[in-house]
Picture (cartoon, rainbow, N blue to C red):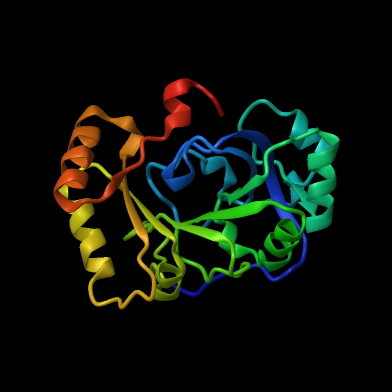
Length: 231
């Protein structure tokens, strides 16, 4: 499917907050999360469906978004420098920046990630792998490949090759088979960590993921933040 990558400099920001990273290799690390608006992939189990559509009527100022305590379709426009000013205004202390969505790779993230590194932050992108990753080479890229979703987007080989970790939602053997087929024949220049993440923390999915991780020598990602009740 033809991509709809956004070229404009301003980021469309749905949410900004400070918490602990609850998934993957950075589990437990204090982090600032920047959630961007817009995603055409259409995952049926998505828990941020309010970020899917970009409605120009939903644009508000950053104060409105920062005061919200519920999932909203509203967003604000921001430059990279303005985001760091926002972090300072809210006295954030975390030095790990997680850019998520939505689908953050719809946006060109080079300016944001490079500026973050200049300011002493580490950076991480959480992406479905359906868009080109445009970010600093020092950014940690988490690809959660969304295979055969209703949006019709293919997982890109260049996104998989860029991945530092591949975090795959699973509930049954079919999902592992899809991952095997996706990775088959790709000659990785670096060894990405592979995590399985039980869909919706279901008991059966968790048991299946644990068994598969042990048999394949992969890793388990449990969405720790949902278990301990933090955002």
